[in-house]
Image (cartoon, rainbow, N blue to C red; front, side):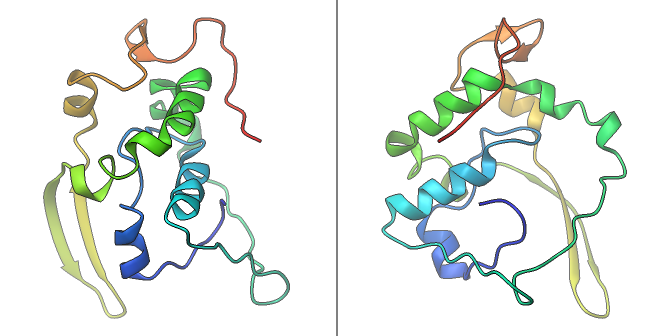
Length: 145
C-alpha cells in the first residue's frame, strides 16, 4: 500500500488497525493491505491529480535505530502468519501511555508512548533475538510478492 491512505474509522476497526509487532519502517503497509484483503475489503489506488503527492525527506531518518529492531525474515514471518494473527494483533491488543493532548486550531495533537521497550521485553513473535535486536543473522532484507 504505502504512501498516503484514507480509511474510515469503521474500516480501520474492522481490520483491527495496524499490527503492534512492527518497529521501524518496512512491511507495515503491506500488512495493513493484507488485513483489508482478509476482511474482504478492497483497496482503491487513486492515480492522477487526486492521488498525487510529493514525498518529503524524514528529518531524523539517519538517527532512527528502531528499524534495526527487526528485519528481513522477521517481517516476512509476520506477513506469512497474518491469517492467524490479524484479529488479535492490532487495536485489540494496543498498549500505550498517554503523554499529552494539545488542541490546535485545525487539529488535536495527541502524544503517546508506544512502550516499545516493554513490548520487546515480553517477547516478539519472530522469536529470534540477535545482538539485542530481532532480525536475521545473514542481513537479508524483507521482500513480498
